[in-house]
Amino acid sequence: METLVETSKAVPVSGNILIDRKKVMELVDQLRLTIPEEVRAAEDVLSQKDQILNIAQNDARRTKSTAEDELRDRLKTSEIVTLAESKAAETVREAEERITRMLQQSEAEAQSRRTEADAYALRSLRSMEAELDKLVGSVRKGIQVLAIEASTNLNLRRYEEESEQAGILR
Image (cartoon, rainbow, N blue to C red):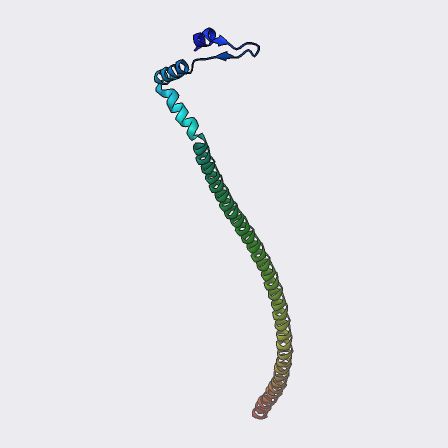
């Protein structure tokens, strides 16, 4: 081709040349025959580049969409787990507060019942003490009465014995 261009006639003043059409077409046919298969494959790829780019872009969009969906699912799952953990912690805290209140209330009730039981026991003991005092008083009176009677009977018996002895002696 270079030889053809250099040997072609120049058109005056324009800087253009006249090339023989037949010779150029023969050279193009020779080029076509000598172009390696890889160049043809590259031409095919170039001719299909738009289609390949569209497929690649569609695949990229699909992959991106799938990744975004998976991320949203994981975020939702993460949010659900976080929410569940938060609710569980709140439930545990509330249960602990209820247990503390119940224990305090039970202790207060137990203390109140102990105080009431102590007061009842004190009243009962005082009542028994009063009854025992009455019984002790009755027992003492009985002892005094019996002691007086026994003393009187003893004195009377002594008197009778002495009188008998004196009567025998007389």
